[in-house]
Length: 484
Image 1: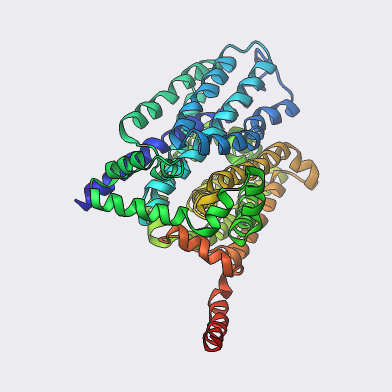
Image 2: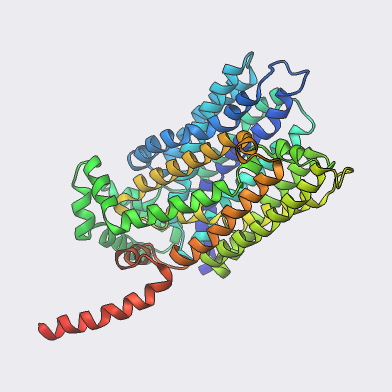
């Protein structure tokens, strides 16, 4: 019976997370589009400056779309917001597929960027609210795995097909998520309860648990969390005031700062650059190995390791995965930079496969930690009263940083005053710095109730000093008791 309960939760979560598949198509598309447009035979020729916009425009719109998504998630519901994301997705691909000039391609990338904002974030919130604590991290990490699968598909097609044909094919990928959600996913009981729809919330929980008594107990717990004095006070204030008050509390601003830093390390250690510019990135290494095959391998590795990460998150938690990931990424990139430098200096004039292997190892380690964990934690760390807005703000900040990183990539070599090897070493230094930050400040959320995570931020900032802080509070509590 326990296994059956878990299966229902898993199917509901998979259906919500499945919109990550078309998002993977959007993310991976620029990697195969840019080299085809830069070809001398391209029907729509582009400059290096214009390729920066092609890669980054879909990301640039996400911060603005995320705020709209935050409103829609709390107004329309988690699943309805995901369904609505299909509209800009379809229109965007139609524009790209029928493009006669660069502006139509950019407009299509802009609209598919809205789909990136509106699809994944509600899915993460939904899984956070319907899955048990021990399953939550694994199920959330399914999203990036499905994104990776979408990337594998578009990378493989890019090696064989014209970019316009791939755009036409991209239209179909939003249909499976809509069908799966219709059959498997009830609306979030948490959202239904916040809208005063207690009977529908109870029905949703009963669908997930298949046990009326447990469903009523869980609904009572949700009401209790939702009706705490602090939550009621924030909820009864205007939206703008609610946001200001919510993020003026330690439970709001502390996780926001931590997530901002995690996403900074994630982006400037080059993880998404190797995804959006995959073919170009391998071409600049000059290894002599086929850049398209290398790109497909990136997608396959991200997919396979992403699936393994769901198990790793259950076994090892967030902190150790991030620290091991960051350190391993730094080592792999340092080696790839060294061999890239030797290739470009003429010491390895015939090329070498070593930097390609190092980059693939780097991607493997990134997926197991620094790429996946920040997204997994983005909905776990905020209290219920600001969770929707906080998730939108976090996604906005993450994609704003991503936009800057993607836009600056083609300028990094001139800025650093060296060849592509210097870019690798720059990414390595950022990855290494992430280890220190995670060790000092990032709390472990694995297996914790969402209320327990919020309680941690009320009294703690530096994670490694949490026990010392707790010891200092005990005498104060005893003294207060004696005074009473």
